[in-house]
Image (tube, rainbow, N blue to C red; front, side, top):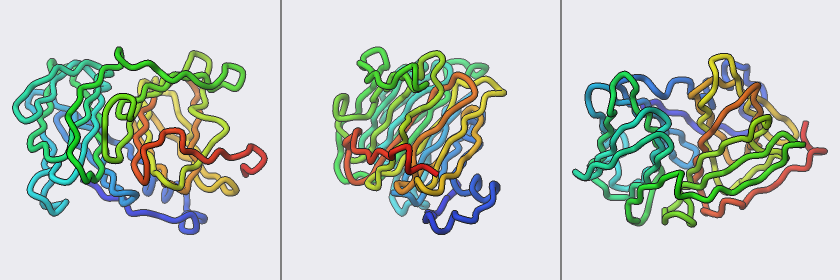
Length: 276
């Protein structure tokens, strides 16, 4: 597990492109046969990819977190973006096809990840945050979610938002997680952009062609910066940063948030006239 420390707007003002990428971009998440995690000090979120092949994999973090087992004081969200697989939770196995998700509550002692076919491995995107209470484990299928449809074709941001870990679907302490699919011809994941000082966020961009790139915008409204992101890469978005991005072609992304509340629409919209 790699660690990223928090940075203030003042600190990044004079960052080079390399420094900005080193601080906020995670380029390698899904490595066959490995667990690849990043710990960000922004609200102590852990996120990354688990890609089992021939053998099952398990997230084993105890000494690093000062606990007896990984989820002793944490909750976990999982969405599979790869081939069919299985998740085994305290001995109970569940099939996980692409777009299936799972909320796993605090005090769950064992979570194992398996692929059905090593040549087409499952790619489990995992996000974990501190938790104060145990809530029930819930399997989540995209087929059972009524998407929130928003945006317009004329502003290039027509999209469907599938809220996986959300009060409409299941209880959680502070984790929210969802899957956004843009309509054909749309490229902005949200615009006008927004901030939410009360919650940080991570974005995983995927289902992209090799030459497609996302321009992920960040920074303060009056001093914006950007990261150029490829397929299956993720960005850390601090609470003080604007949240928006645009791509050169089709893409999908998973957003995950944690912080003071679990109110999805608690956002501070930024007027276009204030962006610089």
